[in-house]
Each structure stands twice: as structure tokens, then as C-alpha cells.
Image (cartoon, rainbow, N blue to C red; front, top):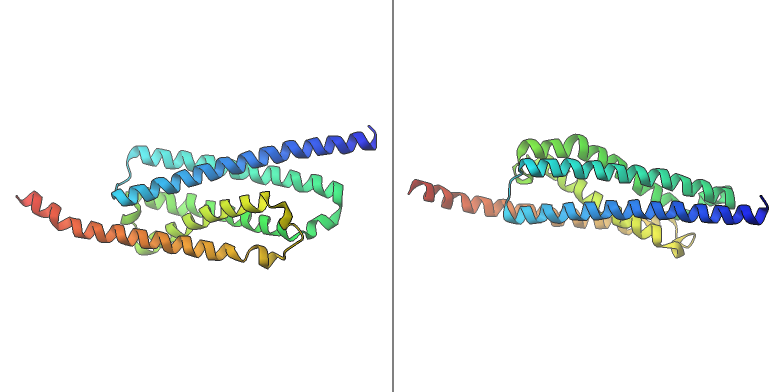
Length: 209
């Protein structure tokens, strides 16, 4: 195989891997956003978890894990292909560092969600019934997940960002968005809990009559 043919083969190979990488990212973002919207809707309706909800959450978690594994595998393949074409200088790209940091955080966050948050929510019956610490952990993990997937997607399509900004500049907005998302969810859950408290006497009076 000539050098030109080899270069064309690597370009097509990279295109295919990037395509699978983007599909995995889109699937994960769609699942996470669907889950977050459903959670907010259930909070507003003060709906408790059902067996169907438990099964759906477990299925959702498995799908996100598969998508995350797909991102790691295809991402590593892209890095390997780009390394072959550009050499060790490629590893100095701040945008690459930012993406690896975010996907690593997503991985650890996914472990926390799977091992701690999801079992606690299934046991409690709803987010509002969790203890304060468990509820704050659930809200923080959820906010980190939603922001991280969207941020990773932005970095993935933002080719002009490569080499133009430092790592700190690329990640400057990242913790701010996580904190804002967390505070928004805390405010929402507090509103739902207050509404629950106000509604309890009404239910009690209705039962008494």
C-alpha cells in the first residue's frame, strides 16, 4: 500500500470512528436529558417512584454505561489515529486534556450514581424522601452528569478551540455551570418539599372527614 493510499485509508478510518463516537455521545446526551426532564416533571407533580420507574432507571443507567464505554473506546481509537498522523505533539493539545478530564469525571460520577444514588432513590421511593446528604449528592451528581455531557459535546465539535486556548480557559465555565445547575435543582426540590408540607394537613383533614 502506497503512502497516499495509506493516508486515505487512515482518513476514512478516522471518519468512521468519529462517527461512532458522535453517535455514542448523542445517545448518552439524549438519555440524560430525557431522564433529567422526567425527574423535574415528577418533582413538580410530587410523584413517587413505581416499579416501572425503577426498571426504567436501571435500563437508562445501563444504556448510559454502554454509551460511556463506547466513548472511551472510540475516543482512544481517535487519539491513536491522530498520534500516528501528528506524533507526540498531538498529546500537548489542551482541548484533548479537557475532554479526557471531563470524561474521567463522568466515569466516576456514573459509578457514584450506580452504586449510591440510584439504590438510595429506589429505597426511599422518591428524591424528596431522601435524607439531606443523600439528596444533595443525588442533585450534585445529576447536575454534573447533565453539564458534563453537554460540555464534552461542545468540546468535541469545537475544532477551532484546539490550541487556541489554555486548559484553564477551556474549563473556566465548566464548574460554574455545574454549580448553577446544582443550585437550580436544590431550589426546585425545596419548592417541592414546601408544597408537600403545605398539602399534608389538607390530606389529613380530608381523611378525617
